[in-house]
Amino acid sequence: MFDWQAFLGWNLVVHWGLLALSALLVLGASDWVVRVHQRFIDLPRDKLLFSYWCFLAAYKVLILLFLLGPYVVIRWLM
Image (cartoon, rainbow, N blue to C red; front, side, top):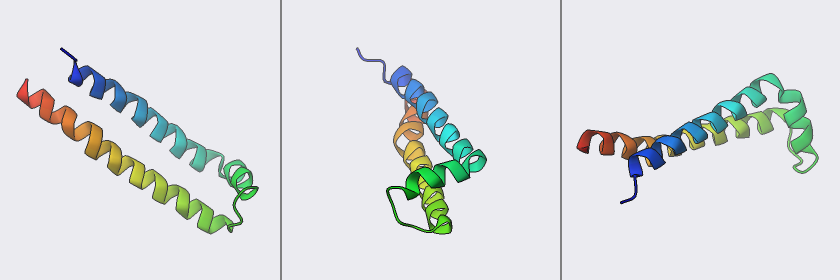
């Protein structure tokens, strides 16, 4: 039988790590991140930073909804 609890738990660890790394990059190296993305997308700096934070907020909600929620339910059931 497949161990969903371990699968969801490790996915939580990986995705929270990616979220933390992304947030640290936007916070600490925002000049570099903006410069890299402005080569591809013609947006002003403030709109680009706003879109980063909107993406990170949506990513966090998806992690909570699809990984943490089922993980907590499985922990309570088992």
